[in-house]
Image 1: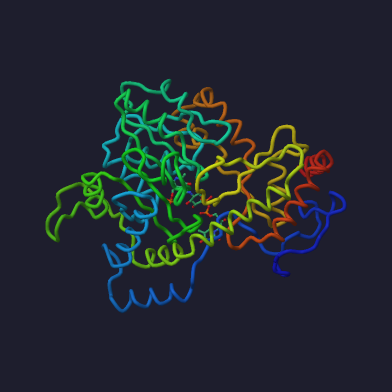
Image 2: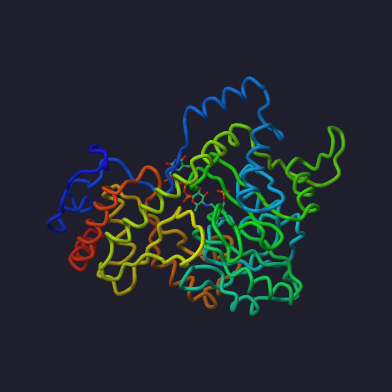
Length: 409
Ligand code: T4K
């Protein structure tokens, strides 16, 4: 149930009742996309105390090792290498694979996917995505392959696997490396088995906003023993023993406190997925029939974590996506426009590739209509019903609201 101090029963009767136009807020406290989910607090405190008792705070401690074991188990891989965050995990994995020159990535992703490459002076070359699942379109990959291309970095966006079989077939034919950014897809299924074992390496994020979080955290999983050993070295400055450095490296280690939080949250994974699934179902039911708004469909089969509730606000909708977001924010319902603008429209890529948009029509279209809705443990059915009622009202009065917003400037 909606806690009474968070969610007011403010039925809007006219556009003037909207908070953006001077009315009271529908929600007294903000509803975020990415409010952390938390497992058993007592268990976490016990672990934190144990860490202090052990006086072992980082560098392959007890809890990091346990966390790695669980991640590998869930993703069905031989190795999991815990890292300080998903971005560093992407950097380590792409470097360990010796990616260089150009790497093909979808333009419709979080900026970290591209930055992890660019940070190492590898050029991300943006390819378009598919309208139905927002994932890299295999049919668009080959047009971007040049003699400088060394690999493909696919993204399993929103927890749905991209077409790994098609991507890997192209890579094989063109002699390219493949790795995946599965920052959204921990605990989800690919076509054949859990996400994790596809390509040469797969990266997860356990950032605070992810459905399983370690505060900050990430991991690379792989079935390749040699690659795993290399990445372990790389995340610890290349040290093999205390006094011996045998590889270039960085500090990419996860600390014990993060691992303890991650482990504790992992123990509530089924419960968190159930909350996410129920929230998505409530959104689906409550938003049904609102013209121009629809939820992104999941494949009929497979495990998903439902950590993002993705809606699209079509051009046919009586209010624009951007105006709807403005209205919702004023009401304290902080829906997001992930990932608008596409990576190709952010720096440094905007300046490097000013014409990239010409080959990215689906990215352009999808990023202009995406609406990501708050979910997770802190969002309940009552809040969703209230938000859907608000959205229905806003769409119904779309033209009048747009007119008022235009007057406001
Ligand atoms: N690849 C992909 C495809 C990714 O989506 C991401 C990260 C990465 C790679 C990189 O992984 P990491 O290096 O982050 O492990 C957020 C997250 O920061 C980012 O992790 C995530 N993707 C991205 C999709 O969303 P922002 O900048 O939009 O929002 P942020 O982090 O400020 O948080 C969003 C909201 O969540 C806040 O408004 C309030 C709430 N929040 C956040 C934190 C951190 C809380 O309530 N409590 C908190 O502790 O990027």
